[in-house]
Structure formats: structure tokens, C-alpha cells
Length: 331
Image 1 (cartoon, rainbow, N blue to C red):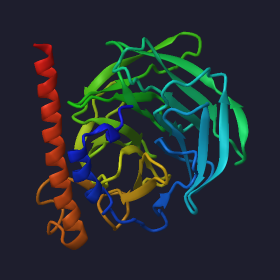
Image 2 (tube, rainbow, N blue to C red):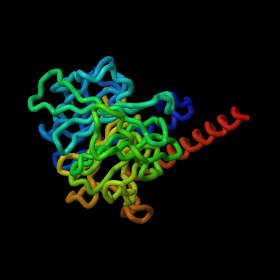
Image 3 (cartoon, rainbow, N blue to C red):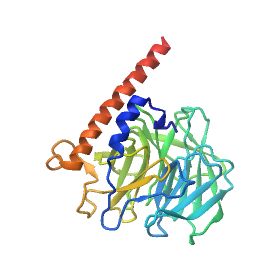
């Protein structure tokens, strides 16, 4: 992935004071936590365990091996490290999802070369019944896109159909891709474009009932109503994505009431935001637009919203200058 730490100092100065102002959040037992394992410094994917309540699976995006980490959200400590075999040397692991079949799906789908690799990989392995350091053999799937190579960081497995989806990562907004109904371990699996995403996507997740799709970026997110295989999902509204150092991951809690947002970096925080319309009574997980969120916020919340606006303006200015420099270089 292309890290935000490569941004120029003037932008970094505008970002950090706002990002550090984000308070810890909690809602009815779905508490935020800090990943304390010193080995996990580039947490790029997050998935709530179905077999072990309170456990979240994560991984580094470029590790020195094929490792997955089970983190206990009650203490933020790693309680199991899984080493995958049968997958070769992972290249750029960016996403993880737990399927309705009880398997873990790992997306080695990043492409730091901007879409130059002819194929990427997805790994499938059973979620372990016991939490202990262990080695598990995974099934490796070769993946290509119908319209050519691309960089991606979001992999989602529909909990009802088991179908796999990938959202690519583009600054100007990318697309959602659908995998075949049955994945082949011996052939190439072609993913086809089914919808546009007006977002710079860094991760995504299906709700446990399969009715919603959440896509997040560094500075925002979108909630969609799922319409079924082969159909473009219907946009519902904006997600209330917390300001984070480098927002890379998202997953639903197993009861579907909360979205858990993760970020890269040592001692990285995972922040919960309650999902609107899912039975919770706290902060809304979606924002339908101006006028839909009450009195507009005050105190800390208002300050964060103001900071987010300033942050966004600086970012847009930076991206605009970058695009202009690219155009100038082409001339």
C-alpha cells in the first residue's frame, strides 16, 4: 500500500493534531481497544471471530511470513498466532474476512506498483477451534480481474452466499468486483466489475445478515443496501468513520450492531461506532447528510467535525497539487 506517512510535512502537521484528538469509544460491551503486540505495526485487515467471542483477526500488510494474529479485544493482547502453509510467500496482504462457512479468507490483493502484477491471491483456511500458536494449511486461489490488474485493499465474503467481493483502491473512486459463484483452486478466478465506488477504499465488510455492505477509506465511508449477486448495491448514506492515523480496516461485530475501525501503526487503536438501525441507541453509524445528525454537535464532537473539515480541505489541496504535477510531467 502507499502509506500516508509519505505526505509532505505541511499536510502531516495539519493531520496529526486532529487525529490525536479522537477519544476512545465504547458501546454496550463493544469497546475500543489497542493492539499491543509489538509485531503488529501495519494492521491492514480486521475480522471479528465467529468461533471466539471478543477475538479479532488481523495481519500486517507486508510481514516476514504468512502470519495471522488473534487479538483479544478485552486486553488488546495476541492470544494466538497462525502460520499459513501452502501459500508460498505472501506479497501484500491487505484484507481478512470470516465467511459464513467458518473459514478465514485472506486477501493478498495489494499492488504497490499500481496494478502491474498479472494476478493476486486469496487464501482460505479454517478458523481454528482452539486459540493457540499453530500452523494451518490454506487453500490458495489465483485471482485476475476481467478489466486488467489493479491495486486493492478490501475483500469481503458474503455471509449467506459465500461469494467473494473485492473493492479496488483509487483516489478518484474505484469499483466493486464480484468473484465466481465457485472458486477454483486449480484454475484462474476472474473477478468482474459490478458497480462503481465513489471512494478511495481501504477496506470493507458485510453485515452478519448480508443486507448491508460498508466500505471505508482514510477519511470517510459509504453504507450500501445489498441487492444480490451481480447487482450494484444501493447507496444508503455516509458512514461516521472516526479520524485515525491511517485508517486501514473495518469489520462488523458478530451481532451487527457496531462497526469496528482499525488503523496502522504501533499500538494501533480499534474504534467502535454503533450502526444506525441495528438496535443500538448510541452514536449513529451513518450520516444521511446535512440536517440528519441532530444539532450539528458541540464540544469535543463539534471540534472533531471542524477538524475533519479542515483536514479534508488540506488533503484535497494536496491531491489537487499532486494531480497538477502529474499533468505537468506528462507535457
